[in-house]
View 1 (cartoon, rainbow, N blue to C red):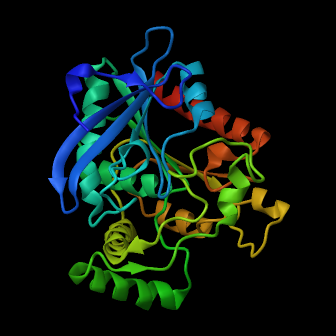
View 2: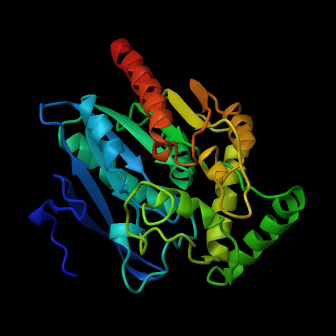
Length: 323
């Protein structure tokens, strides 16, 4: 694939006025690397923007979410990180990473692009693993002028495992991953979560099951190490100089077979971990808990997500008035 940034944006696979720009990055341990920025701007000129970072086994497809930002006066941008979605290349292992800092270059490119395009207030937003990545980035870039607030949608700040698995199993796999990063292991979350989302099953959303399958590809030990080291940093306590809003479900659920209860809570992470670790964030960190929210809160049923958008944009409006 011959990439030339001079060609600029091209129509995105989502249609509906979305555009995409694929950008090259330096080769890594698997070879060629690219990232992709997706955007849809307000019809009226605006200097407000959001950059959305997707989760694990995921990519940007949430057009309703983008529409809500645009309706509220924000230019919408998302980034498909390297080895995910639009940025996945045939020679790569999907979702593969050895150090979460690998994503810094993708975020730096995207945020610099937002600034170049005239956006002066930028919300950095991340869901799940994207929330982990965004919060680590905000901690690392504490004096950055490229973003001005942080929204974390069910951030993946800890493994949803039992005590022995978290205290013994994960550190052991992480240690092994330093020496043997490409060894694959079993794991991941229940395929029932995907069934609750996609319109071909029990959900209402349309997305590419090749890019977001119900059963995620097996992860490498190197991936476990990258996540484990990120979690260790979160547990020490993040320091974020920008206002932070965390939204997650009231409860976690763990169903063994399909039921309507899948629409009642977070089927991927333990919400108690999010509360516990949000309390360790140094800075202005607000946590809002929502009854009936799914793991990706903006994919919850309509009355729930409408409540979430009201809370989010009220919070953002309060920040804008203080600038």
